Structures are given as C-alpha cells and as structure tokens.
Picture 1 (cartoon, rainbow, N blue to C red):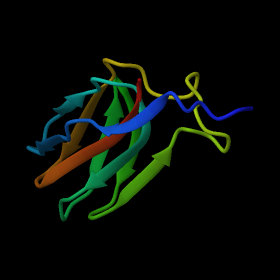
Picture 2: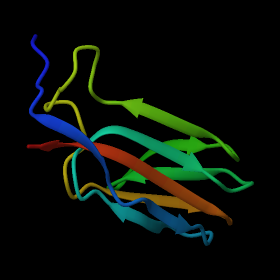
Picture 3: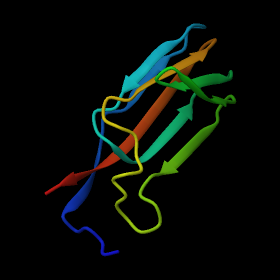
Length: 105
C-alpha cells in the first residue's frame, strides 16, 4: 500500500480531568487519532470507560500508547471516531489523554 503523503501529523488539545471518586468526563475527541496516549498521572487506580463501556483499569502511574496507524501507515478504518467520550473513575489525581491526528493538506 503506498504511503499517503498528503497528510501531516498535528497535536490535538490534551484531554485531562481530576478524578473525584465518581465517573468524570475526561474529554471528547475533536479529531480521529493516529496515535493516542492514555496516562494515569495519579497514585491510585483509575477505570477508563469509552462511552458507557468500562475498557481498562489503569494502575497508579500506568500509561499506554496506541499506534492506530497499523504497520503500513494511514488506516482510516481503525481509529476512534470524532466525538468519542472518555470517562475516568478513580479516588484522586489526574488522568490525561494526549493524541496526534493526520491533517489533510
């Protein structure tokens, strides 16, 4: 598959929220990410939910990087949709989601 050279990576605004012991909206994707980083910056576990689905429990200080480009570059059919909402539930501390997206030229 040829590489699509008509796109460039741009950073999206960081999504970050302080955990309160209840479900908290961390943020909503403004763009479909190419690479996304989930970072539990707290000293306690945080359950991350995508929409209304509990996806993963992050231990204190745990981070995950997902490269959604696949091994061959752009994979527009394998990413999170614009408007996807992320929620966190933990006793305290911050949870951050950072991502880059491909911008058409």
